[in-house]
Image (cartoon, rainbow, N blue to C red):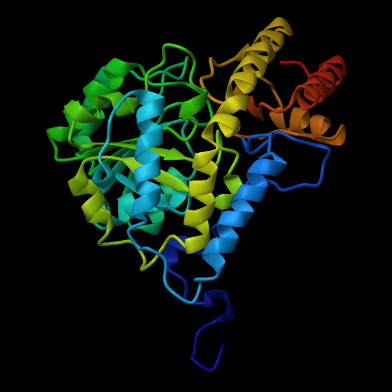
Length: 375
């Protein structure tokens, strides 16, 4: 017993539902080829890095003052970028940004979830969603995806009607499968959720990697006032270390997030770095086409090796199926290639890397399969 009368097993006095849980996080191992966290393998050029550093330097002389808590300049720049990417013109009051799309999601559940409210997702899906729900005391309910990882719209309607979710979380492309939502799915889900006063959050963290002909859900914002589309600068903009996420939604939704955001939640340095990166959008996004081509070639290679591969609109690929996926993961790791052991049982996920990294993965996988670790 401690001086307060509590047993050591009950210390510290954490919320009961958190006791014994492990924090989220992919393995961070020092290996030659890291293809497990869907990072952009191409960092900013020296010229872009220099401009980001210069912008941070200019902001640094004013660090004795708080940043613009409305981050107006950044929101204007993000709105201009989204118009360029999707063809949809957005006002600055339709855009909101935060420290990574993780904070965007957390703010949404803080404002629209909470005790007595429900968030709905469809597995397999991003493993952080239930943690956002848990952290905001929002009940988490999951439906299922079909064998090809698409959604049965009748199943979606039925779950929305049954559980009346305040928030529906749907990635497109989906993580970990890479599956993009069909346009009609967005309309059906938004219509169903509107009948129960729910929001639909479509997480387009990997949206820039979508294949030609796959539209962004941003194109449907004008049709559904309950639609929120989130994006990030971590992937296509190679700014994972900068932690900048953002969303597009109705102005009323953005206003609601002001009620739950922390004061001055985006630092002056973060805003400066993001604005500088957006100034170099052409260069930073120039590698997206290369990564798409590498992805498609890797999909063909994996299928040619006799593996099952999910269609991908992202910068990663889900492949399998293995009787013992952990053995495959360990074999690849022993050869210096780190992939992600995630998704449905029997599947692994590999991020698309540079041509050399992708070849190292191919070689390691071929050696693994030769050792009779067969699908």
